[in-house]
Image (cartoon, rainbow, N blue to C red; front, side):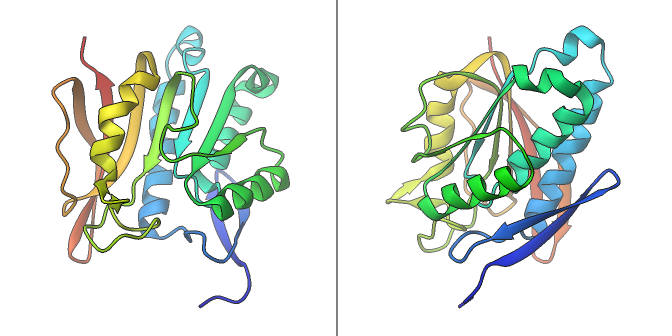
Amino acid sequence: MKLFPSKFFYKLNSNVLEFIVENDVYYPEEDSIFFADTIIEYLSNYFSKSKEDKRKIKKILEVGCGCGFLSIIIYKFFEKNLGKDVKRMKFVAIDINRKAVENTRINAKKHKAKILVKFSDLFENIKEKFDLIIFNTPYLPVEEDYSYSIFQKGENTIDKFLKNVKNFMNYNAVILFLVSSITPIKIPNSYIARIIKRKRIDWEELRVYEIKLRF
């Protein structure tokens, strides 16, 4: 058991960002780094489009924010590309772990990232719609654990997420989420899904999905 907070580092462009990871909060592992790299690559491709297209993402939600690592690097990415216009955007991060909520607030303040951080069991405390939703899912089919297990409160968290997320998506919204090749999921026909990145690690393959609503 850890007795003191840990530190985690991530290189974004030429800057190395430092994050505090409190006890009982998920420490970013190889999956988190792979997902972060994929998100930045995805957003970089998005920003290679016309100026008008760059304005289409205005509200971003991270589900299961942990220490806030992903939300903060996304904020920093938009800050670099939009400058002062980043203030017109809204960034929201949620977690079922209250210690993670406070941890994200600490790191967001440290990095001067304007992110609204809330306690929420998936969308329980969310009342609005978003253009981009990020979820580094607890994807392992093991005994219940907020950090790792797909099973939360006796339910398949990813199935529950996919069942309800459409109610919180703006028109043309995008979901990016990470699972493993061993994750038991079924994507409903109401979505168009494609795997945009894969990475083989040990005995599994990490997969990042892009999901959109089917119209």
